[in-house]
Length: 261
Image 1 (cartoon, rainbow, N blue to C red):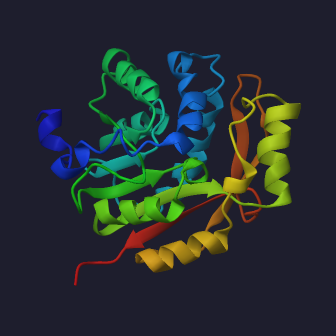
Image 2 (image 1 turned 90 degrees about the vertical axis):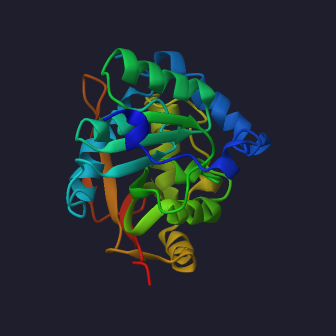
């Protein structure tokens, strides 16, 4: 079966609006992360430690996913493809979208020439997903919500493109003094394992704020969110981390779209 037959269709009335939806507020962050596109998959890439999150994230998420094989999955804010490839290797039919053309280029190149994974990548914004309603079984959005312009709009778009009963798997960063230290000061300025400017404290999201957005949108949280605790860095550059009850910094959760009435 070809990739075109597997992946959800782009919405004809949204495709032409993808680029225009990228305004000046997102341009700086696109340029910031896009600057790492050429070396995204290198062993010594500044973004390499992002891969460390996937075993912890999906160790938790997979409690709620019956199976990946054959599931239609959208990775929102896919960057250079770390999570998209992680899921494609598990048999999911994966689409990835990111606002950075440079990162999408890096993701396409790696998937086509290195891993040979049939991932459908698209340049576009999370606020205006160019897919038809009820296209996906699962949507992932990790390390992204704290970077978007309008969290409410992003959550609404994810709700729209999910099938009834579909799952939204997410993580983000709490807006607390602990998060400011552990996610900005420590990694960016002391350990220097994350490029300066990767995060803006004002965009961090409190769990109560996100819960209110879910309620307004029609998502049901499957259970209370849990935290991710980062302990440090290994010699190979990967991060030491584990699931925690502490949600003062990074936290994650699962929400479900209601069944069709």
